[in-house]
Image 1 (cartoon, rainbow, N blue to C red):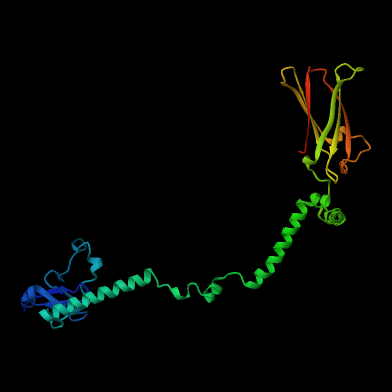
Image 2 (cartoon, rainbow, N blue to C red; image 1 turned 120 degrees about the vertical axis):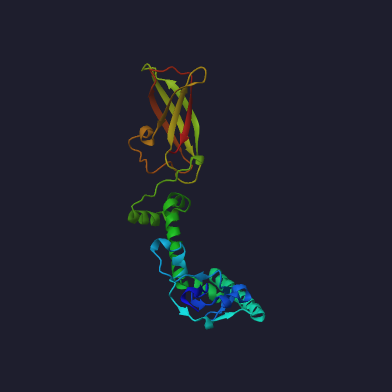
Length: 286
């Protein structure tokens, strides 16, 4: 065979290049088997040229096909495809495709060990916090919760259980807080009230009111709110008085109103800039 008659075909599987003859390609319509990787391919369609080429003449997919002179083998390594071999090749190709699919599935979705999924041993391995740490943390959290409850409800605890008050006072002294009378507005009521003009001073009003503590323990002094209204029952003015404003100088605001006792309140109000026909007294805690 002359140089002009030389033909070269490339195996698409392993990129091996074979020197072939036209007679060899004419057999089985050009279907041949690679003697290197056993791939069956069309030798005519896979013909390549080994003639020198310029960079502009390289095909666009030349880089993906690999260098044309990687491996060059004689045509004896290229076998014509026979009928029985063709069936075997298809079966081998099917086996390879099935194996590749199984490998891909194993990588994308690894098998789950359902038998150990709910086992005690696996749960122990997944537990990030050791059991001794949980056992130590529970009493600490309970102690913190109890301390927080004592801090927020210290006034109510001291009112309902007076024997605890000395201990709570000591704890508050260390924590920087204070035990005060309980603020429970439902335990207070206005037993009587009266608003009169001061005959000696024009425009001056005198509010007299009696606040009763119905609870068996002391309650904090409330705020007293006075509302003045006109003849159409429209609000003219409203004013809230803190305990320091209506208590006498000798009274201690921190003690509160004793259990089952009454407190007399008298307020002098300058109403010279207003005219009023009615009033209302209301107790509240801010």
